Structure formats: C-alpha cells, structure tokens
Image (cartoon, rainbow, N blue to C red; front, side, top):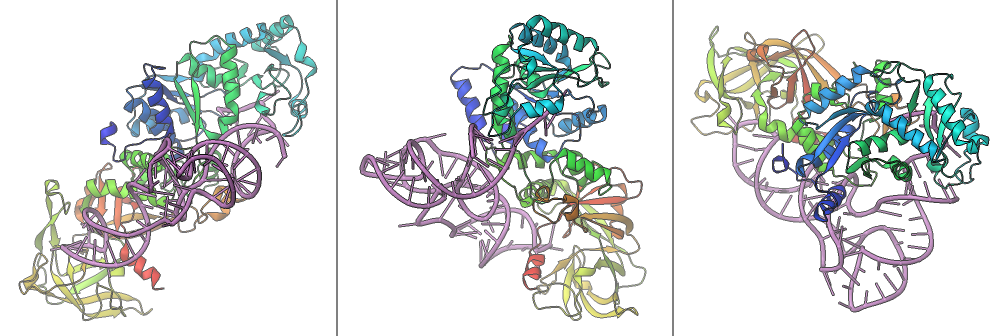
Length: 557
RNA sequence: UGGGCCGUCGCCAAGCGGUAAGGCACCAGGUUUUGAUCCUGGCAUGCGCAGGUUCAAAUCCUGCCGGCCCAGCCA
C-alpha cells in the first residue's frame, strides 16, 4: 500500500524533518529500521513504530530494515523472532535487510578495543551494587571507580580475557569513561559490556560477553547506515550517549536519533512484561487470545492489516504523552469491514418463532444480497420455512413506543422474507419467553407490501430446520480501568465480561464452509471471523456494529 | 527537588508572526428491507496561566503552573 492508498495521509514532525533533509540534500535516500527485541510478541504499540518506520521508507522511496535487538540471550527466544517476522509480514510491510544485532558482535568488540586504546573505556571490577553506589543520585554527582585510571594495556588485557571466558559473570564490566558528575545519569560511565555466560539463540556459546543496548544500538544503526533512528521518548536521555559513542568510534555514518511518544490505548496494556504475565497467569488463552492487544491477537480477532495501518495513520506521531480512545481503533476496523465483509444472517441468542398461517412443510428460496451497496458481491439464496429463529432481543413483552421490533400486536419485516405480526407467546415454568406465535402476510414476500404500508423494523432470522449450530465468542475490553498500567495491580482490573461464549447460535448453513480469511457481517449484530484455531465451528466477534438503539436504551436507564 | 521532554475542543492532531485544518466522539436532521452504511449541518472570540514585544502572538521573550521520563551489569 503506497501513500495514495492510505485513507489518511500521514504527516508529522518526523516526516517533516526527513523531507527537509531530502530537500537540503543532507541525504540522498532514507534508511530506517524497526528494531524489536525478540523477548515477546508484537503489540499495537509496535504497530505504530512499524507503520512509522516502514511507512516512511515506502513514502520517501527509502528502505527499512528489520533488526532484532538480540543482545540479552537470557530473555530472548527464536519463538519470538518467528512470531515477529510473521506479524510484520502480515501487516504487509517488506524489509530491505533482515538483521540481528548479534550479526555485529565482532565489529562491536573491535570498536570496544578501539575505545579502550583511546582511553575512552575501562574495565571495572566494582560489583553491581558498588557501581550503583558510586553512580550518585539524581541530585548528587557520582564518584570515580578506583579502576577508572587503569592503564590501557591492563584494560586491553582484561577485556581480552573477559572475551576469552576467563571470568565469571559480574566479575568485570567494560565501562565508557565519560563523566561521573554529569547531570545526565546515562553519561556517568555507562556499562558497555557485561560478562554473561549464556547460550545465545544465534551465536551459541561463541561469546561469554554481551554488549549493552546503548553501545550496540547506535553502532548497529551506523553500520546499516540508518539515516533516521526513530525510537520512543524514554530514550531521549540516551541520545547524548548515542552521539558520544558514534563520535568516538569510526563508523560509516552517524544516524540521527529522533524520539516520539509511544502509543497508549485506553483500557489496554502495552507492556510486553505485563502481557506476558497475563499469559502466564492464564488470564488469557495465550499471546494470540483475541482479547490481547497483540498483533496476533488482533489478527485472530478479525482485525485487518489495513485497519491497523489506517489506525496508525490517524493517531499521529508527536512527542506528547497521550491516550488514544478505543473508539478510534474500532472506527478503523468498522470502516474497513463495512467495505469488505460478506453479509449473512446469524442468530446469537435464538428465540423460536412459529408462523401459524405458513403451510406445514413448505420451504421457499429467497434471494439475499451479500452486500447492500455492492452489487458485484452478488447474492445468495436462503431458505424460509414455518419455524424460524430470531434474536431474543428482538422481542419485548412490554415494549416501549420507540421499540421498532416485535411485541404482541406489532408487525416487523423479516429481512428478505415477509412481514410478520406477533399474536402470542409461550413461557416456560420460569416465566421466560420460549416461543413466539406469529402470522405472516403472504403478500409481502421479499419484504415489501403491495398496499405500501410501512413497518419500522427489520429483523434478521434463520430457518430452524436449515440452520447450523455454531459457537460464537463475544469480546469486550480486557480491562475495566482506563489505565490499568497505572494501578498497583493491573490484574485486579480485568473485565470479568471480556469474553462471552455463546454455544448454540443458529447460523445460515453456508457458514459451515466459512473460510478462515473471510470477514462476515452478521447483519445487525457485528463483524465476525471464523476462529483460526478451533476444531469446532467457532466465530469470533471482531467488533459490534454501531448501535444507536443500544445507546438510546442506555440513556433511558 | 539535578537533567531531559511535553502542555491547541471530551480523545487525538494541524499550525512554525497575519488573525484556530482534519479525524474520532458527541448533538440535530435526511436517505435506508441492517435502529448499519451513506449524506447534510452543529461542535475552541479560544491555543496551561500571567505579564511583555509587535500594527498583528497559539506562534517571539520572561516568569509561573501542571504532566511524563531517568539513579538495570534490561531494551
């Protein structure tokens, strides 16, 4: 999808900077990168970064790399790299190069030696705890480690032995020699390399030492000749360090780091750690549970890549902390699905209706449109018979005047079929309505009357003898708190009604052959997609339709 | 409170000295065999606050106020 296909043409301060750099010929071509750490699944917040980085490459005829930031083997896993690759592809973005920070372990090591030789880095033997003490506080400067003035020769020797695996974890640390009194704590001799005898998913046991993020990221960017290194706000304080390293080391380029605010969505969590906890504690069914804000969860829920890209274009990119309302995301998916979803009829909570004056055993074939505004999507034939199911909510014993559906004495249109009038109803021992008795007007076949009389309501239905049974999963927000991450225990704010399982829904028979990649609109109830994992026939509700009645109903209560 | 960053409509967001775009939400109408879609109209004499500069300030200056981030050998 190129810029002209996007519904909302994105423009933001980063794109302005890039346009300026192109106009001023500072750069001939743009190179960006999306640098996830493979320690979890991608979520909607990453989608913002993906759309930004890959979107810029697309729109400015540049390139974007996918680079796994895999410098911490204890937390990372091949399962995550594969999932991330799938998600980026699913969003329909193509990377120029697929890289790993670990591809650069050797040059990174060589650059570190260069730094030591320049007297810009030293091997420290202080313990982690001592280093913390020496670092000082936000208001007090730190103090120098006794090892700060170790000779270059000794540093070189110690670092070589660190690399050779002579020492245990934590014994030594390679630090940049910058300024222990800097008001920016990141500049108080930050760690460059730590000893960590861990098996790496790509480099195996080749390295007993691993480089830190601040040191790795800028050099990786430079090696790939990234022009604009886009990251989130919390790295703003790291930019002086990013620049310091690239100023001290001879790399082919010096990318510009630009920070933007991460996406925050109301009523949801976007923290890999917390999402992982939901999975581990079994609050959800896995990373791809349709309630999860992960790319894989949204996919299984029935969101389309186009809708997510549209959403990312709508929310903008700035440096301001903000919370996006869920309605924006829902608007994006509704807009997309309204165009592409195949209309069908499905009754979620069935209420039996017997049409008294309809001939026993008769079955009529009626024609229904697959999309009300799109002729090209064709029609289908549906069966009508004496006993049908309608939605429970479409009948009220004591209906208010504005209720345009069924009640004794009221007439409605059965979509594509006939006008029916409710004459009576049957209750069970609990006083629950279990059946409606109606009569139909044979003159209204197809849904219009020769006498021109109007009915206010049109409801959906399915023929009892032709219907198929299916399970339908209805989803609601996962949290009841608008900002669960701000609470002391976000798991206390889980929405107990985030999932409603409906077992005996009655659907049009054609849905038995529903394709896993086809989006359906069950008329009047919402957009659905067949679950990609279930063995039985199961549909997930992506999002409801806008419901003015529900809104009015709520206001009246 | 040392440093960094941010404050334009309920939620986002344009704007870059010339007199407040747009989207979502909301409200009011119209069309409609989905109370859907679609269409029309409404929605900041105001840009965190207070001063100042200027013919002219959301845009420049000064001072306040409020919010976010940083003391991992995580990223």
